[in-house]
Image (cartoon, rainbow, N blue to C red):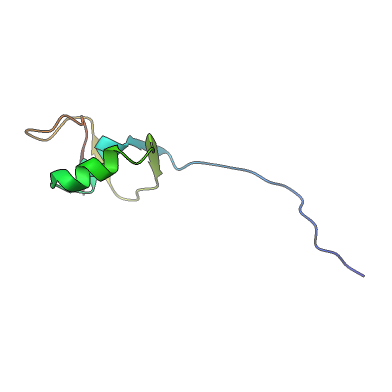
Length: 71
């Protein structure tokens, strides 16, 4: 009788790591209510796999996040 076997286990994170504040701005959200949800959920960072997206380390006008994403 054949039994299923696990031959290996691994973990990996996508290469782009953003803080919640950066994620909020990258998603183009603007409402203060949504921002508070992002900042008070107990998550420090989110990892993303973004294909065909440039990331410029310059904040949009009026932003404090330090990140701007453009296609």
